[in-house]
Structure formats: structure tokens, C-alpha cells
Image 1 (spheres, rainbow, N blue to C red):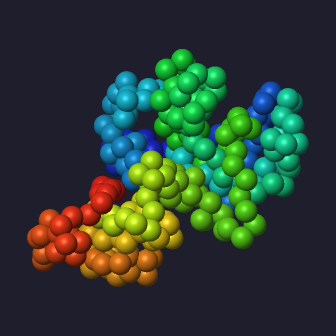
Image 2 (image 1 turned 180 degrees about the vertical axis):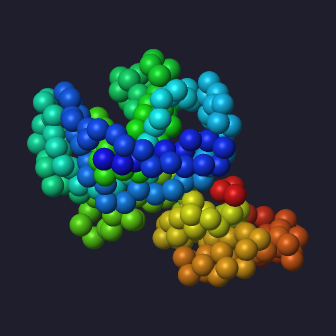
Image 3 (image 1 turned 120 degrees about the vertical axis):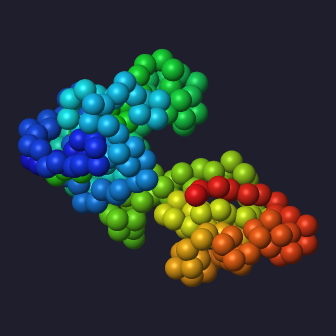
Length: 249
């Protein structure tokens, strides 16, 4: 199969890789959608000479297939994978971090903070989704509901999931007003989700097009910091200040 590799120096390359075979506890997912994330730019922009780490994560010295927003269909299952974990033909998203699975961080859902073993991040130090197939541990799969498209699943697996996690930690509700800075993919996801949770969303961005999209996604009010003082505008709209702010810019 061919896969997209960020080779550094603002270059990408299509390279040949062997089709993956699942080992114990692993599955192979046939990709139906693989999203591009802003953090992919770290790989794209890094010097060709490389480095020991990107974003605090160790860099694989060998070519690595990019993409950490994968979504597709289970194509093959390895030994020790029960039907409850995965079945061939199942529509799935993939959580793109793999930790030890047993430490406090992993058991509480924060595998990216695992300190017990090197964290694997697909598209960074392990092969990602920008290819036909992706091999992953079965426990990193998340079922994708039939009503959701594969492209939606790819977004949920990283950017939208990030926004949802932040809002959950804020414990936001219909009693709250939130000022959301930045209306790119993560910011728009946060706008849509916060509005669905009942909150009044003040969306801020320097792009008029993104602000229009934010209104479509449920923003209560929009502010362009290039034409308005954002602090003053938020105070005026809320009669003193927002309950929460979230920076996704």
C-alpha cells in the first residue's frame, strides 16, 4: 500500500509500505476517512534533519505514515480480540494515543499522559491513517454510529473530541455564557457542542467567513477582534463578563 509521509522541510511524499497484519490484541482498519489536524503541521514544517522530539513526543527515525484522525471499517482481527472488542465490517473511529493501559492516567482516560511506557501517537511515532490500512490495538477503537459519516468520525476522533473534552471539564450548562476564541475546526466544534449543551456562545475570530459559519453552528453572538475590542464587547454582551472562556485559536 502507499502512505503519505511528512518528510519535513514543508514536503510530503507517497511511499510504499507493506500491508499490515494484525498481531495479538490488534486489528487492521481499512481507512474511509483520515483527517488533517493543525498539529500535523509540526511534522510538515520540521527541519529535514529531524530532531529527537516533536511536541514532547519521541520522533521515529524511520518514515512514518501521517494522520491521527482515522476512521474506517475493521478489515482484519488478530488473536486475543473478542467479538465485544471488534468484528470484521464494524464501523469505527480510532483513539490515536496508546499508553500502558493500567496506570492512573490510562485508567482515567488520559493515556496521552502515560508515564509508564513511551506513548504511541499514530502519525507521529507510529503509522497513522493516511494510507489504505492502519493497524491498531483493538482497545483503541470507538464504534461509529451508522447515522454518522466517516468524515464526521474522523473529525470526532481528534478535533471535535478535544472540544467535547474541554467542555466536559468546564461542566458547562444552560446557565452559562462562554467566550470561544478561534473558530477553526476545533473552535466550531466547541461552538456547536456548547450551544447544544444550552450555553450562550460568543464566538470570536478575525475571519468574517468563520464567524458566519459560527452563527450556523449555533453561536449566540460573534465578535471580530480586528474591528471590535474583544474584552469590551464581551463585557457589553454579558453585562460584566463571560462565565467561561475557551481558547482554540
